[in-house]
Image (cartoon, rainbow, N blue to C red):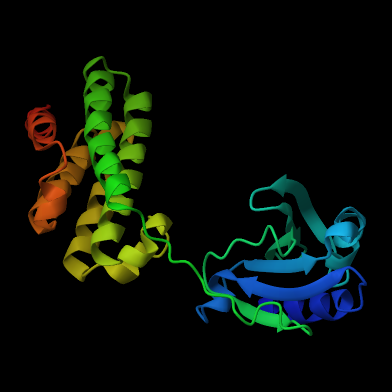
Length: 255
């Protein structure tokens, strides 16, 4: 596969760089969940005192694989090049130091001569109980905003708010059915849901466009109704049920 080929070529070029201490992967390649559409999450751990110099060489290492048709520099978890090669492969090249390395997600080690990653233990992507409660109550508040936008016939903004609602609901569902990956929200959510719930989500999201409102949001609320009934008592007792029930009834009454 092109992802494996790209990692091999670029890794071989980088291994000889004096500033490089280790190379590893995250994302689908690290989870052995690779398919034809996967991007590459490629990480280098470099020496602190050679970081700036290495960043100047980073782009040239990418070009060892194939010509680039797009690239940009960002700083998300560290200095990063977002690149697209001429075969369409999306390649994210992250540069970190041992001190700035974030232990999120599983990794696959490519190069680690000094065993710097031998004690790496991935933190899961769950959210706290308090975060869950805040997200659920935020979902309810967005219903209030959606109702106002819909009733004043601002359907473009209402559709955007509906999208926000679906995003919050994705995290809520992930927490319920795949707690350790709650922060991933929509990403591969379908693997965590049974076929019935998956179809309900698909149906609701099909109807979030301006011309179909409020149907899709009504369906999202109905899913949220089901979620509440499945929550542990220690959580369901802490969400603002009064506010949710009020907004649930108002949304279901929209025409």
